Image (cartoon, rainbow, N blue to C red):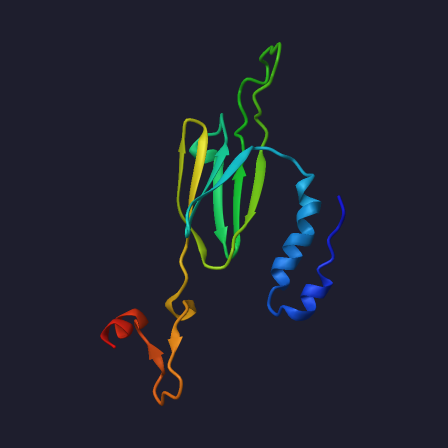
Amino acid sequence: MTRFDFTPYRRTMVGFDRLFDALENANARSGSDNYPPFNIEKVDDDRFRITLAVAGFKRDEIDITAQQNLLLVEGKKAESGNDNANYIHLGIATRSFERRFELADFVRVESADLADGMLVVELVREIPEAMKPRSIEIGAKSDGVIENKSTQDKAA
């Protein structure tokens, strides 16, 4: 696959270094192991769901770690006592795994649940009040914030 050059964008977009680095490194990671399979679903504007197929893993064999901008899901299969079993075909994956998901700013893990071999991780984006858009009154001596512009428009 062709490598995309982000240099023109890096010159004019300040503070996006982490995003550009993640996009450039995505190709290197995409060829890696594809186990376990997973889905990423957008539930609504600020809610997401990651579902991983982890059949054969128990709750105590899965570790979920949420760090700033990173979700790490690890599965460490406990050693089974069936090493002497005489399998004709061994098709059920029992290997350990590690899945990393880069999270956007202000996205946090809300919950995780394991049922029927499916690990479901619920994510929510919570933008702090200070980061939400606000109207600024021109020429205001105070903080200049107009709390609800639509209420003022109706009163006029």
